[in-house]
Length: 270
Image (cartoon, rainbow, N blue to C red; front, side, top):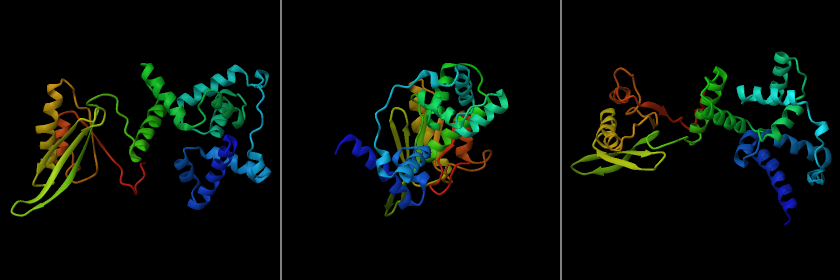
C-alpha cells in the first residue's frame, strides 16, 4: 500500500467511524483530527468522489496572494486573547473591533501557516506565552486556560510541572479479614516523579484520609524541602464535605493545599 492509499483509507475510515458512532465529535476525538478536517473530507467526497482525495502536486505558495501583514498580526493577537474561538467568530469580531474585513477562510489560512489550526494548538501557544511573560492575563485568557485544564482532567490528563505540584490520592478496598474486618488502603502518588505512598486503615473516612497525608506524605515532602501544592481526589465522602467541618477539607486548608477533584464519567465539566 502506498502512502497516498494509506491516507485515503484513513480519511474514508474517519467518515465510516462517524457514521457508525452516530457522533462526529467522538469520531474526531478518537482519531485525533478536527471537526473541520472531517467536514473538509466529507465535502470533497460528496463533490468529487474518492478520486477527490488523491493529493495533487503542490505548487509553491505565492506570497502575493497572502493577506496584508496587518491582518495577520490582528488575527494572531486576537487568537492569543481568545484562543478557543472559531474562525467565523474571529473574523466577525475583528471586523467589529478593528474594522478589518477578513474571511473565515483567511483566518484559517493564517492559523495553518502558524500551526494554530486547532484550538488546543492555540491554547498551547497561550500557555507558552503566559509562562514566558509576567504580564497579567485577561479574564478571557484565564477562563480559556482553566476550561482547558478541566477538560484535560475530565479525560484523565493531568498537567504536572515538578515534584510536589500534585499528589493523586485514592482509597483502595483491600479485602476482609476475619476477626479484623474490612481493610482499606490510602494510596498517594506524586504525579510528576511517580513516587508512591500507602497506608492501611480499618475505615474509609475523612480522618484516615487526612491522617495519611499527615503521617506518610507531608513528612516525606518536608524532609526534602518540597511543598505539596495540590491534591487530586475523586468525589468520595472521605475527601469531600463542608469546608469548615470536614476533617480532610480542614486539614488541607490548614496546610495551604489546593484540592482538585476528578469528574465522574457521566458528568461533563461546566
